[in-house]
Amino acid sequence: MVNWYNEFEQWCKDCKVRPRVHRLWDAWNKHSFGAFSDWQRTGGVGIIHYEAFRLLANLHQIKSGRPTKETQQLIETTLLHPGPDVVVCDEGHLLKNTSTKTTAAVMKINTLRRIVLTGTPLQNHLMEFYTLLSFVRPNFLIGRSEFKYLFRDPIETGRTKNCDIDAGTLMMRRAHVLQNLFTGYVHRLHNSVLASYLPPKFDYAIFINLSRLQKDIYKSYLDHRALNSTTTGGNFLMDYHVLVKIVTHPILIPNSRNYSSREAERDSFDASFEDSEDISFLPSSDWFSAIVDSYKDLTNEIELSGKMVVLISILKSCALVEDKILIFSQFLTSLDLIEEVLLLLDKEAEMKANDELFSSASSTSPEQQRWRKYVEFYRIDGNTHPDARQYACDTFNNDNRYLKMDFVFHRLN
Picture 1 (cartoon, rainbow, N blue to C red):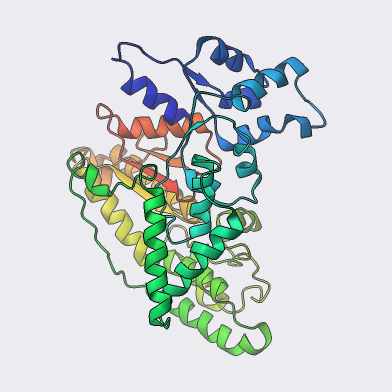
Picture 2: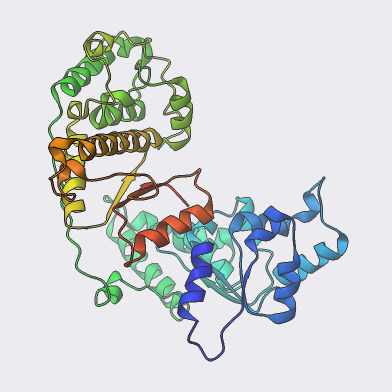
């Protein structure tokens, strides 16, 4: 929300008629609804996120802390009946499911001029496509069941590998009819439209060898699962979850002696599947404890992880030439580890800078590069306040201030 607000402030500052921008998303959190009356009186752009809209569109369902009747009438008038003159829904793919409360709330809007923006391809799931189109242009398409019968079913059947010629021909015809229906109010833009505005991008896939400890733990886990597969059954997602953490750093393994119950609880929220922390099939630490017992502190042993060795090397090299870095991770505990390693490197750099042996060394040498939180790097995850998140992004993008790095939890909304 803050980002949208700042976009208006940046790109409209030179407009002859500068639109007023209202922070409607703060109304629910602060229980101050003056922004709605200001918006109704002065016009302009009102910005609100889906969760706040859903709550405000269903005030009649709230049992305690409900606003006054006058406030409820004001919110209903500004948001729903008749609503704003134009509605723009960013991240429109969030409305693809008719069974969600958010979609149901948005469908209550009476505004006729509607725009949905999304960067997520929806054409491969026709019913999700149908839901969005029904919102953008109500009562234009046929009913949901008729759409399934006339378009969804024959098109999906004709796309199967073993369909006959008649099914393939029918699929092509129905797809052609459907495309003609959408012409004029469905606009697809390829990323080529931005090619002239963006610098060239280079993608590199780096294959990194595991350390000796990681190889031993990896093999031990596979042997353990092979021995216990008859009693515990197969769980591909769980195996993937554990093995990914092994190849990141041994300290991230659930049930390791360096992996606390608090960290396991936190990781249950950032896993890529619901039952990722159901590690009941693992004995306490028998399957790998004998391997790691010879290591006193896994956190301080960067070389125990091939990925961490390469990552630190990249960070130091980029810092020397003042390249900015973004690191994305799907595990909060991985972000914890990266942060701990950076702070450890900063502590070592500070000690070396104060050492007489390094007093004549260049301050830009890799050994003396500083890695202070909120100075050289920021961390953004689900616990980061939106204002702090926006400040970190603005600081990172500020050409006048050198910030080395942001690292981000990759499922942030």
